[in-house]
Length: 176
Image (cartoon, rainbow, N blue to C red; front, side):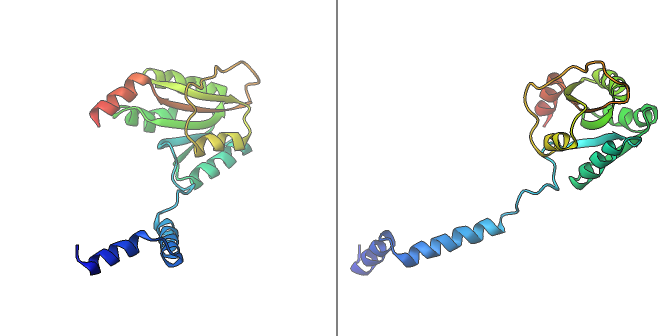
C-alpha cells in the first residue's frame, strides 16, 4: 500500500468530531426523507366501514374512518341494498375486510351472509367507546380476539370486524 493511501485509510478509521457530526446530520436528513407513517393509510386494507346513520356515534365513527382513507357506507338498519348492490358483487371476487358500527340485528345478518363466503367475525365490541373502535382501525388486529355478541338492548351499537377466514387467507397467500 502506498504511504498516501495508507494515511487516508487511517484517517477514515480515526473518529473525529467532524466525522461524528457529518454522520449525525446524514442520519437526521435520511430520517426526514423517509415518508412518515400517517393515520391516512389504514394498517388493514378495509374494503368498507359500515355505519348506521340513525346514530350520532356511528356518524362520528364514519367521519373518522373516512379520515383514515377507509370508504364508508351508510345503512338505516337494513343491509339488503348494501348486500345486493355492493357486498355480494365484491364477495364473488373474493373475501374482504369489513368494519362497522351498527346494531346487533345488522351485524347478525352481515355475519351470516359473510360466513357463507368463507369469512368470519374477528372482533366484536358491545357498546364501544368510539375511541376504542378507532384504536382498532389504527392498529393491527389483535390475534385470537373474537367475542360473541351477548343479548342486550336492540338499539345498542356494536363495533365489529368481519375478515377472511383462515382457509380464505391461506388461498389468497397461495395465489399472490
